[in-house]
Image (cartoon, rainbow, N blue to C red; front, side, top):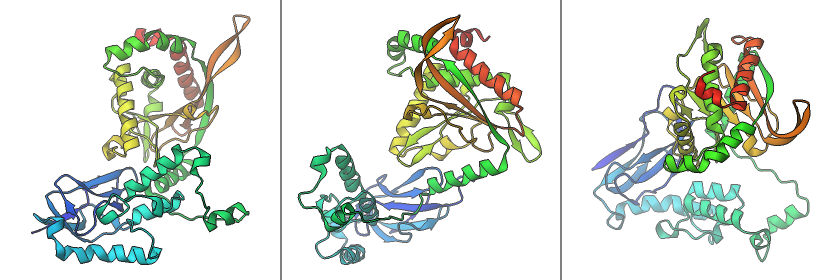
Length: 406
C-alpha cells in the first residue's frame, strides 16, 4: 500500500516552500518518524517525517522544486524493506547512474544536495567517505567534511598534489561562482528594501555606562546559574527588561501602522536577533514584559540552540512588536539597524569598550556601549524616540530602577 508524503500545512504568512534535501532515495528503507525530506521556506526549514515503516517509492518533487501547502512530495510503500524491494532498485539506480555519468566514472555517487554543498565549499567528493546506501555520499557526510576542513590547520589542509584548478587560481585566475539565493536570504533582502522604501526611518544614538550591570552580573552570575538550573546570566536579559519597561512608558514605540490606523499593543513581544548558518533570524519572546531575567535568558538560549540546529518553528518567528539586535557580539562599534515592518522601532546594541569618561570632574575609565534606536518617524516623534532611548540608558546605568519601577 502506497502512502503519500505531503508537504506540511504552511501558515498564512508562508505562500510556498522549496524542496531542500531528500535524505532518502527511492528504494531506501524508511522507519516511522524518520526524517525524509527538508522543505525550506522564507523563514525556517521544515522537516517532513515518515508516517509509516516501509520503502521510499517515487519522488514527485525533486530538490529545488517549489511546493505548496499539503502538496504531494512522494510516496512510501508501506511494510516493505530495502532488501525486499527489488522493484524499487531501478528507480534508485537511475539518478545514481546519471550522477556518476555527469561526474565521471571514478567520481563517487553523491546526493544532489551533497554535490552542491561540496562544490560551494571546495570539497573533493573523492575524499569523502559515504555513509549512505551503497557508499553514497550524503549531505551530512559533506557537512562533516566541511567542519573537519575548517578545524584543520592551514598546512594540513593542503593536499599533497594540488588539483589543476587550484594551480590556475594561484596563478591569478579571476574565478567567479554563481549560486542561487536561499529563500531566507531572498526574503531578508525583500523586507530590507521594503522597510527603507515604505517608512520614514530615522536613527537616534546614545551611550550607556555598563559598570553597574557588569558588576551585578559578576557578583551574582554563579548563584544565578545554580539557582536557575544552569541558565546563565547574560547582558541581553537586562536590555530586554529595560526595553519592556520603556515600552510601557512610550506605547507608540511598541505600536504599528495598519493602513490608516495605529495599532497599540498591550503586550511586548520582543524579537531577539539570533545568528544561524542560514543567516540572521529573529525568534520572538512572547509577553516579555512579564518574564523574569531567568526566563528571558532561558528563552534566548533555547532559541539560539534551535537556530543552530535548524529547528525553529515558523510560529516562533512570526509577529513581534519590537526587536533587539546585538551587533556587539561580532565587534560592531556603531550601526543603524533597519526596522522590521510592521514594527515601529528596533534597538541596536554594540561592543562594550573601555573608554575615558568625565565623571564628577574626574577622568575615569568606564565600560561604554553605544546604543542605536531606528524608528518609523510616521509614528514616533523625535522627542519620543530620544526620551525612550534615554530611559533605557538610565535603567541600565542604575538597574535597581527596574526593581523599584522608577
